[in-house]
Length: 114
Image (spheres, rainbow, N blue to C red):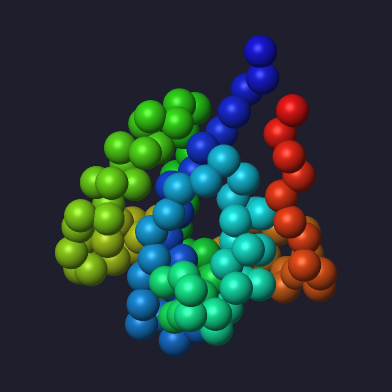
């Protein structure tokens, strides 16, 4: 049986004015997708350039990650910022700390899971 990790994350735009909360099983790939979608109107994160990672939590079980994502999405902006600032008080961008190559240089897409 494979071990899985699931992540709830919060991204922001370069000016730190917009917050986006999401959930994924591959955080580096998901952040890359947000980056490659920047400026595209079809998604919230793309429309508002929310590709800068400022917070994430890791979970073993998908149900726990889904519940946490739903909880955080229901919070006010202030409460989300309070959560972020517990571990990242200056709202530093974390992309390069979790990814070897930032910004991405190609249009990588997810590999199918067997």
